[in-house]
Structure formats: structure tokens, C-alpha cells
Image (cartoon, rainbow, N blue to C red; front, side, top):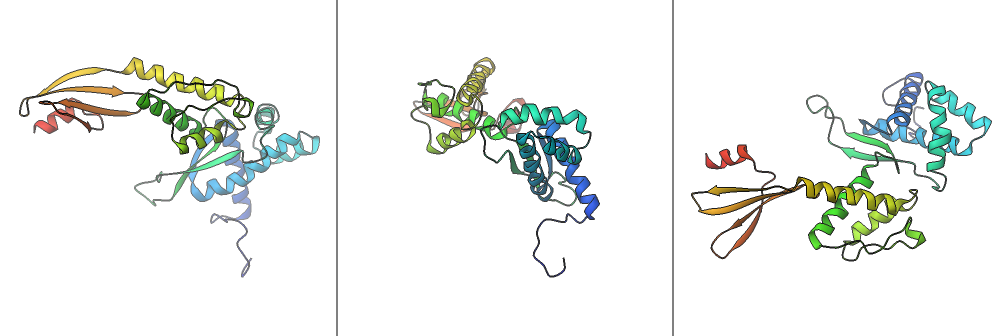
Length: 253
């Protein structure tokens, strides 16, 4: 409306085109549980996705008809909405989706702000994965072992001592409403630690101009490569970002 407040983003489209776009995005979100699009589209699709999941939690004949009118190919996606997602978010009062900003998808064209729209507490939950990686890295750095085990933080699960406060807050966030949240997080951390041990490699390389014996160690769980250079009674760590043969050739040149 001319002169009125902006109630929603028009996305430079007609009403019919805008509704079809949002329905398509929500349908893709239910299929893949994580999609990439522009920031304005993600924010508008998030509003519709929250309403659709709320319809799934109601699980009535009226809500089924309403969800059927929103989704494309409803016969293929209604079972997941009213079975899997309804059970997943049974205890969550709201906030079933998350929007994360990323770098522009079209770097060489319009540089439009982009984002990831995902379902929380799912197999593609990015915050859950990043929290598990951070927890594994801090345990590896401090030599901290898990002290408590439990299915949920409210059921008596204890956090590791020594981790940062921000990591502890993120752990509580990603496990609060997730079914068997602490157990799933601990399993993911153990998987990352085992992968880090399997992929740890030690290589010896010589830098003749400094007469250093350098050991390149790859910490897969941390995602960091460091060179520990041992000189005459001194020790220094240099973050190389993953120096390999090409990087060594560049350094020699």
C-alpha cells in the first residue's frame, strides 16, 4: 500500500509470483532441511516455514488441508511434516528454523547478501556441527575428558570443566530441545576426535637456509595446520594454513 508501513518484503514480484516463490522455498526446505538463497528470501521463507511446521504440530484435519494448500507435491511431503518433524519439535515452543548469513553466492554479478535457511535439531544443523568441532578442539587443546554423561542437560548431564563460557552456552542451546541432545553431541565429538587421530600425519622437512628441523602436523579435528620449528634451544609455532609441497616451493622461491 502506498504510504503504509512495510508489512513484508515484496521481493520485486507480483503477489502470485511471490507466493509461488515462498512455497517453493519451503518445500525445498522440508526436502533438504538446508537451502541457500538470498537474505531477504530466506527471511520471508522462514516466516512461512514456521507456520507450516506449527500446522504439522497441530495434526488436525484442518491443519492438514492448510499445509496441503501451501506445499508443492503435498502427498510426498505431508508424511514427513506430520510424522518426523512433528515428533522432532514436540517439546520446542518455537524457532524451528535458523537463518545464517554467508558470503554472496553470486560473487561476480550483483553481490546480493546470501544466507542459509535450515531446520534446527536436524542432521544438517550447522550450529550443532560447529559446536561439536569447537568442543573437540578445546578438549584436544586442554586435554579435557568428558566427565558427565546423560541424555539431556536437564536430566543431569554435566558439562566439561575448562571449556569457554561461550562454548558452554552454545552447547546448552543446541542440546536443550534436541532429542537425546547430550548423547548426540558426545557421539559427534568422539567421531571428530577419532577422525583427527586417523588423519594425523607427521612429516619431516628441512629448511637448509635456516638449518631447522620442522615437523608438519595436521590436526584434522581442529582444522589447523602448524609447523613446530625447533631451533637452538627455542621452540616456535607458526600457523601456516596448510603448507604443502606447493607452499614449500613458494617459500624457497
